Image (tube, rainbow, N blue to C red; front, side, top):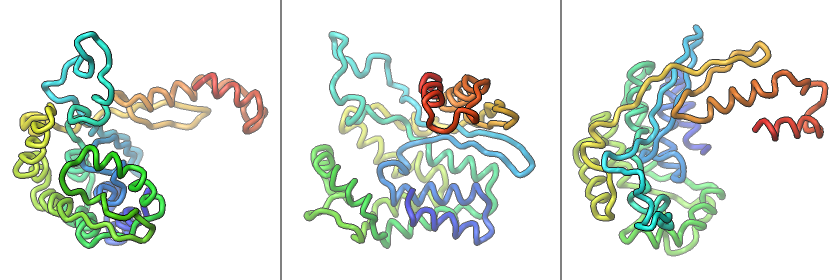
Length: 275
């Protein structure tokens, strides 16, 4: 999703790292270069298949804080409070990305952990030249950044962002250094955890020290199905995507899509109805 992050993964492969090593390096690099999606405050899923055919999946999605409740986004009359689930401190789940990368590396990694995090540190501290797309995204979000962040913000500047501008994020570099040096404890404990919880409390958020310390990614048995002789390895729940994918393929399998042709009326109708 971003050239500098892809390059970080390629460099890891050239150093003798395996696919998981490269994925970890790319994930952390995206935390720097793709703020809208690749950040360490989020989570995700990993689907793995080895050359020998071993299948495995890792669930490192965000989890609800211990103090979360069923009606936390509703007012006393049962109506949704506008923006509460989107742009407040209560919108955040307990982050899973860092623990997920630690777990993936522990089980399958080949290179040393610090080698995988360092490229992201370099990108954050030295800066990287932003693309036109990122410039457009930052400019589009600038009003919301100003509204929701009262302090200084690396993603804001006095003039509009332009392609080729250098984006430097020193505090993110310091956070990544703690993750490089202390692994999981560099994020879920110590100064980063303290800062995160303090920020939560300042805005009536729910994430606590206990939530951070108790977060652990989960290895899950892969969901495996078939489609016209092909073996499909995908993510099980809590992901909805894997279940939906296999249901979709099984729904259309008996129809002669090849005969009907790509984007023909019958093909489109069937796929739309299946989806």
